[in-house]
Amino acid sequence: MAQTDLHPRTALIVLTALNLLNYADRNVLFAVQPLVQEEFHISKVQIGYLTSAFLLCYMCAAPFVGPLADRYSRKLIIVVGAMFWSGLTLLTAVTHNYTELLVRHTLVGIGEATFVTIAPTFVVDLFSEDRRARILGVFYLAIPVGSAAGYLLGGNLAPHYGWRFPFYIAAAPGFLLAGALLFLTEPERGQFDSPKDHGQNSANDPISPRRGAVLGLLRNPAFLTATLGMAFMAEIARLNGGSESNLEPAFKALRDLLPNVGAISANLGAHATLFQQEQIDIAPYNFNFVETLKAKGVDVEFVVPDSGPVAWRTSLHIVKGAARPDLAFQWIEGAITPEVQGDESKPPYDIIPTNTKVAMTPVMTAKIAKTPADLSKLIFLDWKKLNEVRGSAIDRFNREIKV
Image 1 (cartoon, rainbow, N blue to C red):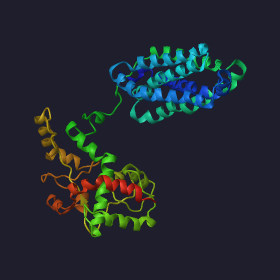
Image 2 (cartoon, helix red, strand yellow; image 1 turned 180 degrees about the horizontal axis):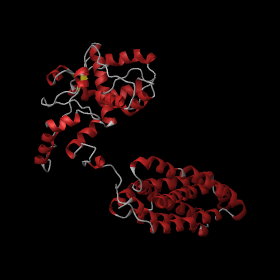
Image 3 (cartoon, rainbow, N blue to C red; image 1 turned 180 degrees about the vertical axis):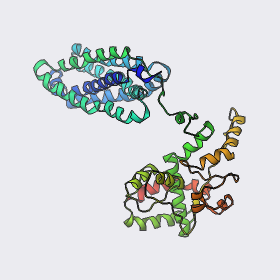
Image 4 (tube, one colour; image 1 turned 90 degrees about the horizontal axis):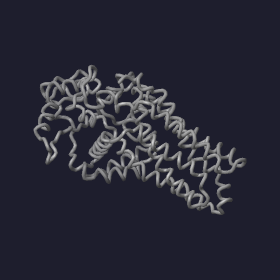
């Protein structure tokens, strides 16, 4: 389906306006609280319960709404949710005691949860990936604007027309916008996503389904941060008389280094940003990540310490009880073929091949190993021992190693 058929800008305007009403509605109450207290003779604690009840209902409803969007029309769920919360807002007209107001405000959480959970997925499927950041910026601009509008609406209208009147004003547009959304075409899920996101081939991307999972793991910040960090700690420990199971020398060395440390980045993604901003002089990093930054023009170089380069192997395993072990075998066999490893050794992946039939790239022979046989001379850590202390070491690092 062509993007022009989806009326993306119209849909963005309608959804952004609904998002604005969403936040205006929930903030009107804060502006009229003194008048509510005066009429119902309630305490500040009871007023606080209104927001607590709303947030609790909102929090409990949201996880159940998400799966519904995977089974049914997102547009219809958003419309029903908007109608539901607008109707409850309008029911403020017949709210004559604190209990009724508490029930009304609590149930509004269900309607608003349906919108906040699903609307962003609707929006991103309307636009190509290169425009999504700007589009979501527009969509989420409704949060501060809507919140301010709620205060302004309640604060200016309530003293003149009563505290219920601002809720009527907030409810009416909700019905109109929900109705307008019914006439818009719902976008196909993931229609503008890159083929690589689904593990498919494209003309410019050699990743196939059998390669995508490994490359995804090797570029997963959480996995690589934990792995590189532990390798870094183990090597420092080894150079100072420790081992994979005894990281105490590493912690001592790090504490001695702290006066010269400018920052401790949260993950390897932060590393990349700091390198590009020229705020890192030296840091542990992956060979292929350095090559990626160099290709982007970043003035960075991968160097090997005199003690030798530390490496780790990526292994592939078949899960016990797999429904189709034959397909798993085919996947693994494909991943170690010269064709696949040859492609992965080239930019932008720069993954060092383990198949001896694949020639090392010039930058690999200059920095890592001259031949595949030389790979055995790299420093390989005992990950069985490291994994036994991984959890406690990470917790201790987070507690003790601070700038």
